[in-house]
Length: 292
Image: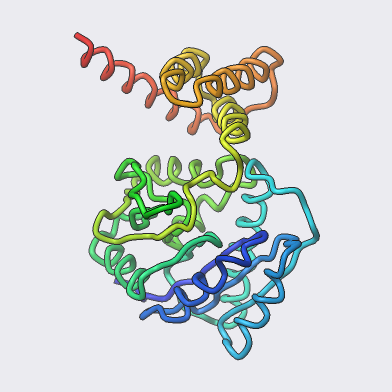
């Protein structure tokens, strides 16, 4: 069954309003991490000051600060997470810590005190489980609402990853590294799950750290980078055209088309590319059947 110990990595940028809730969530966990590495990615608010104040006299917290950089979900975030995972696993090995899981936690998250205890119990019950999380309830400005995600798509904001899986595939330093991890896990025979009875409380809607216009630019870039076909991009554009703000779908297809026709670099991992093609083929067949 292995042990129930885990390491935790968080990267934050200008999260001073959310840090108290984040710290309370981990400090009061029934099952605390052996090491919680917090990367301050060049915050310009009081985040670093608060991090130092909150972490004082808490031995399992390690804080590292990077220089000021522009917020970048495409590369910078995943660079931070990869660096953090590599660093915290090395630190654990140097201290002879025994652990079976590594977690990634965003800076705008609050958790119930039994979150990681319950998540680890799910791993203990299912030896094929590779990556999992609870279900996100995001604050939309007035109340918390459940985010609609596939049950085999654990959220990136509060996920736990089996150590043996990370040792096999690592965390990629490229766009959508969290999604690539899920694909590689499935290709290796691991299951990935989001549990409906365990909840993650996010202080803003996913993607709200950037505005919706920037989000569609990012979506266009990532869709192209991950090897999605041009027919898929057209299908997504058509589907998004019925959602407000309607013109944002034009941003998506423009960005995708620009990269497509200019032959910009894409992911080189053929397993990931083939997986995405198979997913689109299956979803297209299913959509056609529903229309008949």
